[in-house]
Image (cartoon, rainbow, N blue to C red; front, side):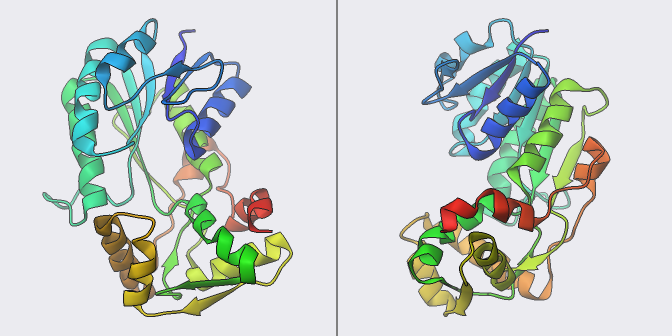
Length: 274
């Protein structure tokens, strides 16, 4: 079997893809800017650094690691060299919109369109909220057990990185996934406030949500993220107060097992919150 090239191999999802492929004895070629000892170095924004890693490869796991336009030349290269691409896209993509209504969705759709244009077999994974995003609360929970933010009643379907990787592995190694757009979620919709409580319970220390104004939340978030990301996130949170994220059964449909509950993720990462 030819090796599968896994981009973003040291990231939360990519590292899980590598581990799960290896658990199946599938040869893997991990790719990242700072690769592990058995990986290869490459920058997705620089196709010339990716080309050598494609020797003997016909299947690639791809993810966005910066502006979409920077990834398009690499996508074109993949179209010339490989047969199958599984792309970690975003649940923010909306096929019903000719023009995506938020920049996160627009970026990912730009890459999807570039992949479609190559003629390779493709599968798009469109996960909604990443459970790993809650790691941003770890310093606050460790410090005083309080997470301060806006829209504590915003309810979303957080997905474990192991579930995203499990679906990716099926698409990378199995048949019947070409042309699929898999919308991935966790098992249920959970509010911000509930998430904080669950994280505290897993870590063995009380934790609670403290509501602050959207303006104050935006100011705090700008210290960590660009303004367009912050504004997109806050807009999404506001909408999810009245319109909780919908739950899909895609993880079970594709892998044959139920998706992992957020409590499982919290237990897996409890040390980060202690």
